[in-house]
Amino acid sequence: MDVLYFAWVRERIGLPRETVETSAATVAELVEELRAREERYAAAFADISALRVAINQELTDFDASLDGAREVAFFPPMTGG
Image (cartoon, rainbow, N blue to C red; front, side):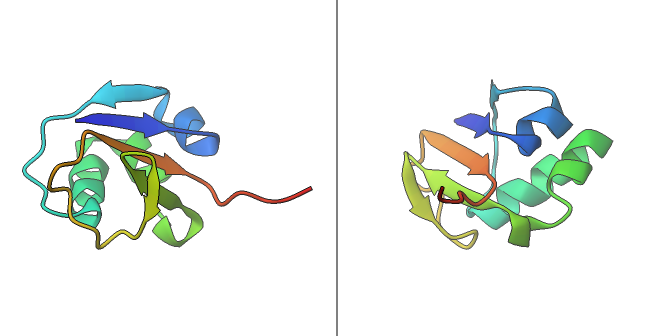
């Protein structure tokens, strides 16, 4: 599946997107797999309460299933202005 990173998540990881092979069943499990990769991922996902996630361009929670997911995006909360 494609994993997209936005804003400071992208800055910490150093990539805007990548294709990931995963055995994770949920977004939270995917985050754990990514954290274990290396320090830059651990830094980006150190505090998931500061992140939002979307599966196939629909906002969801970290306990959401990845069944049928083609794309997962991580980004900080949006602010109005």
